[in-house]
Image (cartoon, rainbow, N blue to C red):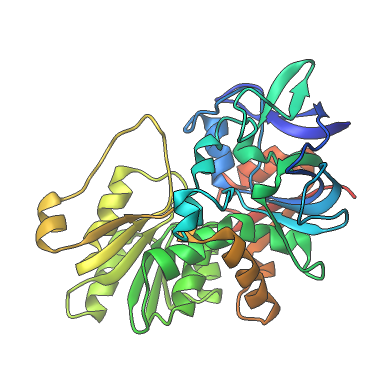
Length: 373
C-alpha cells in the first residue's frame, strides 16, 4: 500500500512530505495506522547532521502511537484494533541485556540508525520511486501508516488517548527515568535539571516523585522556567551558575546531590558544568546528545576523582519499555503523572517543520503531530 510520510532526502536537510510504497507485514510485524507522533530533538539531530542516518532517504519519527491495522502471518500477541505505543528502543527479550533486566540496552538497539529491518540490514519496508527508504529507529512515525517489528510495540489500554500516551515512547521515560533510575534521587535530595524541554520537564517530574526536597530547573526561556514550576520544580533559574550557587546555599556549600543534563544540543561544557554543580559523591547524569563528530570535553578529572563524583550516561532513563511504559500510563490514569499538560502544540503532518522551528525557538515543551483519521 501507499502512505504519506515526512522523510529526509539529505542530511543536513529539512523534512519533506512524500508518498511512499510500504510493505505488508511479515511474520513478527504489524501495520499500524498512526494517530500521534511526538517531535523530539533526536529527530532534529538527523536533520541538522549532528547524527548520521544509515541510509537516505529516511522516514523520521521515533515517538509514536496508533491502532493496529494488520498483523503479519503467525505473529502472536497482537490483533487488529489494538492500541499501541512504540518504544523507540526495541526489546528482543532474549539477548544478554534483556535477560539481565536491562531492556534499554537490548542488542537490537545497534540497528536503530540503519533504517532497515533488525534481522536483515539489506531489507527495507519503505520505498520511494524504487529506492529503499529507511525508518528511523525502525519506526518512522512521521508516516501516516507504518509497518514495524513487534519488538518495538507495546499494547496499551484503549481508553488512554493516544495523543497523550505517545509521549511515553521516548520523552517521559527518558526524563523521568533519568531522575528515578539513573540519578537514583532519594527523599530529601537537592536536584538540578539543566534544560527544560520534552526530556527535562519529565526529569523534573521524576525528581519530584522520588521525594527530592529541592528541584532546581535551569533554562534561559521564561516559559520553560514557569512550566517547570508547575510540574514539580521548587526553583527555576536561567543559568547553571545560579543553580549551582542556589544548591550550595541549601547544602552548607556542598552542592546538589545530582544534576541531570537534558540540554537539546549537549556539549562537553554542559557536562562539565553539571559535574561541577554536584557535591562530593554526587552524580551528574548525561541525557542530551549533540554533534557526533565533536569530541569535546570540559571535565575536571582532579575533582571527579578526589571528590568521588559519578558521571552517568542514561539511555531512555534506564527504563525497561515493556514494564515502564505501562507503569507510567497507569500513573497517568491514577493522576500521579502529568502527561496531557506536556503537549504544548498539536500540528498536522504538513506542519512538521513549523513544529521543529517552534521546538528550537523554545516555544514548546512537546509538540505532537496528530495524523488525519
